[in-house]
Length: 176
Image (tube, rainbow, N blue to C red; front, side, top):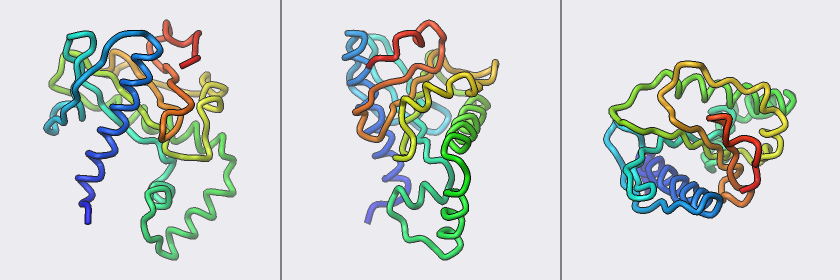
């Protein structure tokens, strides 16, 4: 049986590999070799065109109850009721609230690193990259944060590509 920590590291590495592949395809810049870091550092480090780059990885589930369901955990009656209640709330409102909450939480962190990018992998199959793009004006990255860039992988497998959230110069061509 895989421990929760091992599963978290596996999910982070998988997200980093997907991100690196998508980024290389979109920009033609080589990203290679990942390794996991200790707590005061971002989750994963890699090489970006022969320069060290740290990636903080986050997964967007929506809520703890949705995360448990998506990850295939056994659900208590209470968690099942929570999920049913969440389904009554419009998916758009849940998406914006969940993503803004994740951005606010990550913005409060500080890292022992020179260059950190935040990579958010959408794990909720109810939300798409296109919906995130459509609600982009409602997303809020706090002014003070440690990230050089912020990216969203549109789905668990990376099939829908990347969405650049920050800096603004990456936003007009949301194609990869």
